[in-house]
Amino acid sequence: MKLIILDHNGVINQNSETFIKTPEEWVPIPGSLEAIARLTHAGYRVITATNQSGIGRGLLDMATFNAINEKMYKAVAQAGGRIDSIFFCPHTNADKCNCRKPKTGMFEEIMQRYGTDLKNTPIIGDALRDLQAADAIGALPVLLLTGKGRMTQEQNELPPHTLIFDDLSAAADAITGRG
Image (spheres, rainbow, N blue to C red):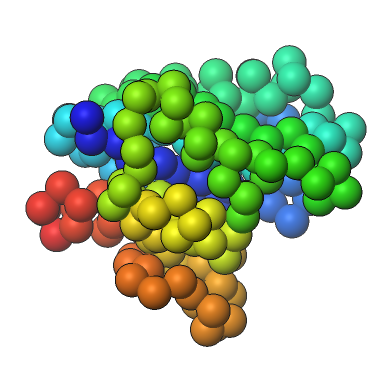
């Protein structure tokens, strides 16, 4: 089984310093939906793993989060792709949970749910915590320069073997052998 794990904000959709709180605020990054379609057609199961502390902060409720995800599912489907599942952490830093990236709880749940390890599975994000979680679980950290990606790259703290791409489209092309 070929898996690929994507963060949401800054990878699939535009990032917002004030959180994505409504479906109207969810805006795909140009080319990201088509990239997911290419990954789907190449046989990848596309999974998202996202920190969503806006829920824990009371900025949005589960019904709104589900409406945002429904918009994303529909947009990806219209582009010819599919997101197989969404894993998320609703907690804030203060909660000290095991699921909030850079911790690996979400990825452990993915391994259990899909009955596989994540060795060399691409985990794509725009923040250092995405890459640290990927590295800690034995996956392949992939940094996109969209969202917070350029700022993350400038920190010079990337895990070894981190791959870097301009955007999800470029990463999808490289992963599927089209790039």
